[in-house]
Image 1 (tube, rainbow, N blue to C red):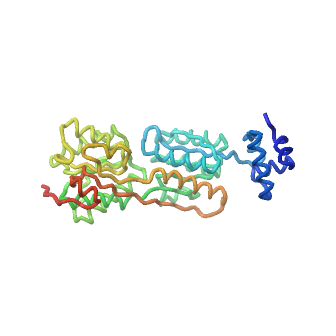
Image 2: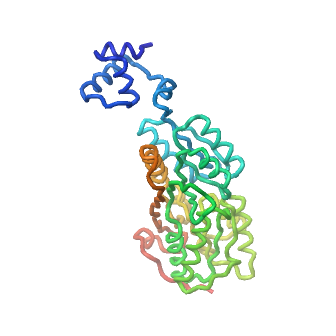
Image 3: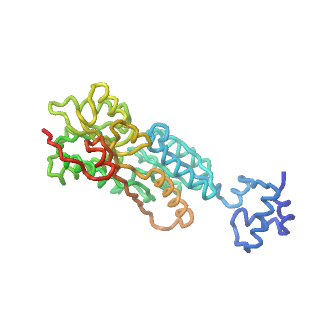
Length: 353
């Protein structure tokens, strides 16, 4: 197996120069750098990452803690993170906190003990222990998807990357109101998550914009998972005056709602309209096709990596929150005609009791 000394002899430089090229510890003239890279390629030299980390105090690895196994939305984010990490020459260590605060703290500590250079974390509904640990150990961290705002008990501030939630949900609700719906039910996410709070705020904002009253019994938490959404949907359908339109606040809960509607023999959109926050790959294959708010999942993952690398390069810069826009994907489960959804225009207003 070729060594660093072999590379140095082939390139006609010192071992120290090879080390500087590999570890980026000192500027090297372009032609010298290229000679070293050519020698590495010709000899098939593989750098010793453990030795490199001793020189640079960096492992060129990033830890990712998201509930990708239990939440399909995070699977797409993971793809964006992985592509961006590899593009910048880093490796990725992944842990699933299962949205459980205690387990979250454990897996993040394990990632930190693996000496990752920084972390990307989608925090749970109760992230106090997690954030205290990250702050105490000064771990460069980007909070992903779920943000921490207005919390004076949490310091220092962290970089954050998330999607817009309030305005897109408001747009979905006003669209349904514009079709004549007066009772719009919401299967909400897990209480305590910023995404849940912001989407509920958007739901209320949409009702207000449409001049509809807010009725708290039309919001039932589905706890961001399929089984919870089944219970929430059943509860909404059991009301004396059930909703004529239903909005689910993430893709896992959409599946749970669809199971209940099918079990009860209800047709979408003839018997009840269904729209969802979170688009997913097969939403266009349902009949009818699901009207949805599409989050830029892969872009969120890539942006989180970019923000983290900027933090590693400039540790003292102020923390910031980056929000990416969502898209309204107009299909037919909202009751609009196929030609209207294809054009992205509102359909005919319906008369609803």
